[in-house]
Length: 302
Image (cartoon, rainbow, N blue to C red):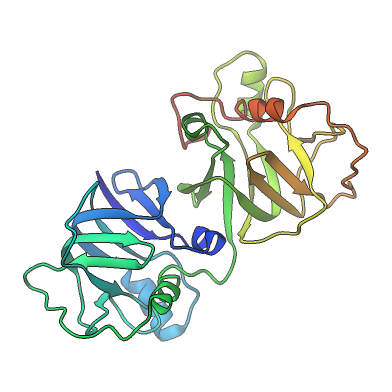
């Protein structure tokens, strides 16, 4: 499969180790996030206009740098040299040892130590790498660094959840799914339920993806004050608080994790341990599967 690979800033920061997003080049959709991946017959991509604006104008950074190639399971064990890219200093990927531009390579790998290639015959990566591993990893985060939070949509991914046996969430940005995660935080979320689709489902019609939360993706959130929310297209027209059934349309914070979906309210609702949630953990997770219960559609919505 032909893919492109770039460092996943949010997951790398959250996990404390390099995490990479793998994108299907045919569809533009995120396939998965990984800690290591091999590619062959690779080309390095740097968006020229985005790079120019960062380099010359100091504008905010966006996803514009990746390595493209055919994804493979194995690769040679020797001959690897490190590559680097820094949008504030250079216009393309270079060999770490000598700063010479690298545009193509026979092989590439991404792992816990960074990005590496086996050069093709035209390249000459001789020289000494003067940067430490920690410096390389820190620089990789600048490939696609985003100083401002990104607005995303988050919803349960039915197929990934079934295959992995735990809740997996799809992250959509600008109508493209860019990530699949087991947990995520959002700031200032708004709840979306497609009214037309919900009415069809309640009337017994075909089910499709129509419910999600939209907000600013962030790396951290408060530790306390969380209240569980729920949604069932067979019973409800919007998200509600699990304890009271009161509708919830927006919140101060939201989190998706292994236990479900939670918010810190901004409408005066308070987390009260004496409030009784009538549903078990298993019932909540089963209900989440009904938000977007299409066995045919993975990352599209209706």
